[in-house]
Image (cartoon, rainbow, N blue to C red; front, side, top):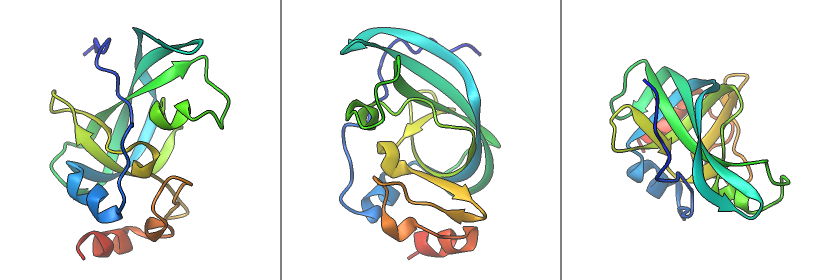
Length: 157
C-alpha cells in the first residue's frame, strides 16, 4: 500500500514531564526492529532551506508491552531534506527516519490503525543494544539499561 502522507506533518512539538505521562498517553509500547525507509513522500512545506518529507518505516514487533498491534506496523515520521546540522533544534521537532536497529518505542496511532507516530519525538525512542535499553539525551534516564523483563516490570508499576 502506498502512502499519500502529504499532510499532516508528523512533528514532536510536545514533550512529557514524566515517564508516567509518556506511558499513559502511548497507544502502543513495543520492542521492535526498524527497517530502512519503505516510502518517502515530499510535502509541500519547507523549514528554513529544507523540504519536509514524510517517511514510512516498517517495525517488526518482537514484544508488545502495551496496546494491540500485529507482527509489523508502519512508523511514520517527518524529516527535513537536506538534513540540518545535528545540533539544530529542528531535529527535535522533525525526527526523520530512525536508523535500522532494535528499539523500545512509545507510539501513538494515526487515523489509519496500522500507522503510528512517535508519541513524543526522541523521548519515545530507546535503542535496544546488547539486550538493554539506552536512554538518549531527550529520553527518561529511568528507562536506561533495562532488559525486556525489567521493562515489563517498570511498565506495570
